[in-house]
Picture 1 (cartoon, rainbow, N blue to C red):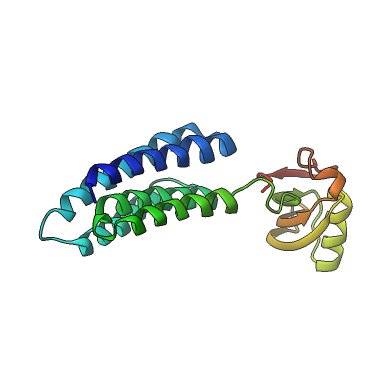
Picture 2 (picture 1 turned 90 degrees about the vertical axis):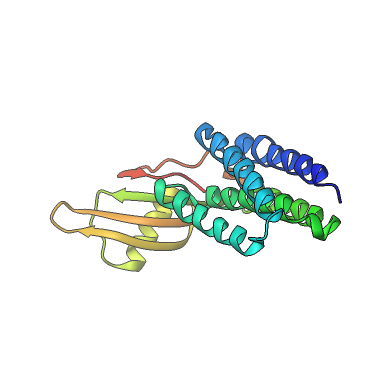
Length: 201
């Protein structure tokens, strides 16, 4: 198949990835340029590798090296890692996938479809996650869970104690909880006692 078709397909795919999926959902502008540049850069390099005797093996090695460099350079969240790998995959599929023809185009569409479904706001929309600093030192797991449920007005599904400070009388926890159906469409609930940090997921 004509390589121009794959280049056009990649540009359309990364455009959908960034401007139709990622940015409307997460609104982080700095990663827009990162995803676009990584995708087009990998596409360009993989096109050169595909036309040389070096082959696809080095292309996959490039995929791994770029991933390590990007993930070590700054802290990004897990859903942003997924978009980053998708941008890399689209570039490689377009640059090295010409021999596979329509299969490569189908795989590119599959990557987008998986992200569209897996990161959809309606999926598990009642589930939240926060890192909370309580103004009490609570060592008992059952008491801690009951306190969190009363404070959040939600069903706690998992708690991991990050720090139990008996001197300053504080407890830092990573809590995963499920809000009632009536609260699912509203903003995440604010803690009624203690301080918290982190974002709902």
